[in-house]
Length: 319
Image (cartoon, rainbow, N blue to C red; front, side, top):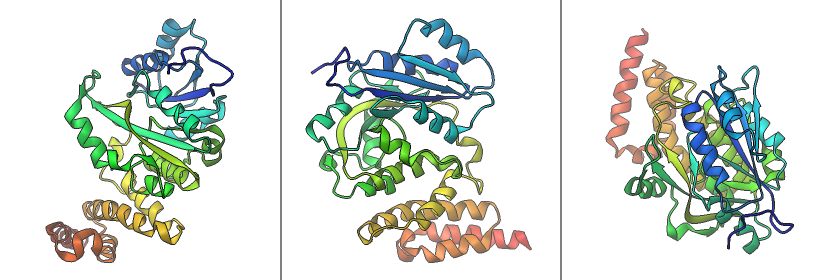
């Protein structure tokens, strides 16, 4: 069923689109939103760019498109506060987030919003992502691997028995999801978690939601671009993984979600140990490694001994 025009029965969807210095990519993203088979939507854009190129492009290309609601942030807000401002400006019943270098499939919004007709008490929905190159050409094999890596497989489809698990184990994507606007606005994007603000938001959203649905169909396209907003901090002590580790460790969870926390820490802890070793923080790195031996298969992993060697070299370097 297609809903190419708004009706009193179709909820309004606010597509929130943060952008920063990517005028060469954002037009394709906006166009993918405008060609949706679902009609009752708005595209709310927050521009953190340092120059006026994006503003000029949008003025020239979308001046007569009432669904496009553009704002230039002066001064720039930063990643988290930009997204938070979009949520605040959104006037729809549902919110969908898409980043400026990614795309929506033509029926992506319709596929997600239709889940509420089947499950009226639903609060959050997400689905699969295609993987594409900078030009948007889809790699189908890589797409299967991407979703499998994040536990988005056919056997997992449906209402999730433990909604919070989706966020903790990173099954929930960082964009291309849809959720009730009131819940999204209540959770908000926090600006005190640095580059892992998207992981924190996804986890808190899923923990707060009573019903979360995973749809095993493609609704968005993840474009592998040359630059990443988190690239500049990779390998440093303010890297997204370090912040994510601290967030997961500090979470207060019900007993049934403790296995999910352990899964998250199994992924995060070794990366954090490596970061601390590279930054010559041998004591801290060693403490994390030895208190998370389950992340190294309790010593039956060559990765542990490699990290211990890195830490010992870091300790010698400190002296």
